[in-house]
Image (cartoon, helix red, strand yellow):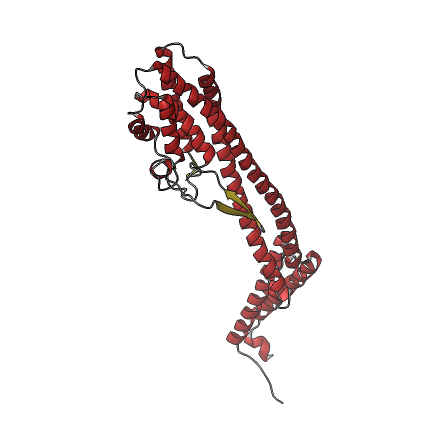
Length: 337
């Protein structure tokens, strides 16, 4: 008759291995009960994880698009806020310049100083940042979009100094702001952002919004043009000729009034982009919720099965502890009996 036996050390090792295995299983089941998800998705899906991987990829893509949309919405709203602030300080001023008769030279001088201050204020607003990014620099969001008001007026002062009529000064200022790239005007010397095709931000699957508004936009230049026409008088343009100065002030006011309509149109275009972003965000949220539900259904653990398995493993662990305790009390003298 053959007898098989193992030594005490081997038995202790076997018990330790069994204990570790049961504890690991117990920890896994406890985690599944707490999280409601299976610990080993691959085993649940029998190795076929393609569908789950596709869902995970779409969740990541949709989440990124929603983040893009959130960033675009913040940027577009910041642009709207800047334009609203600019119009608040220029709309009534432009109307006043267009209709005010400017009875004497002192009033005319006060008005030109007021416009120069407004010009500087508008430039500062357009050079503002949001989330450490310049709003009106196009893709070069780390670059200040516009030169200072003083630098622009220095250039315009040199251009208009020899001119003697309001029409000539207004035309010279207009030509400088309207000069194309490479023409030595505003776009070359005062605007420092990017030109060309507008930056497009993907905010949904197949949906992108163009970020077209910059410091070089026609509406922005038209408003700056009107302000600059009057502000150059604060630098001495048409000095000693009150009739021509009054005419230039009126022309500047009319230009600002026309530019205000352009600003409203630009704000409307930005508003349309905001609507596109908002719709994409709603669609993205709905898609993301559906994808997360589908992922949850794949990864969810059955609470009843998990609880039953947990109870079984607890019983196994208790039995192992009982066996270990009984073996630890064995003595050689008891065995020899």
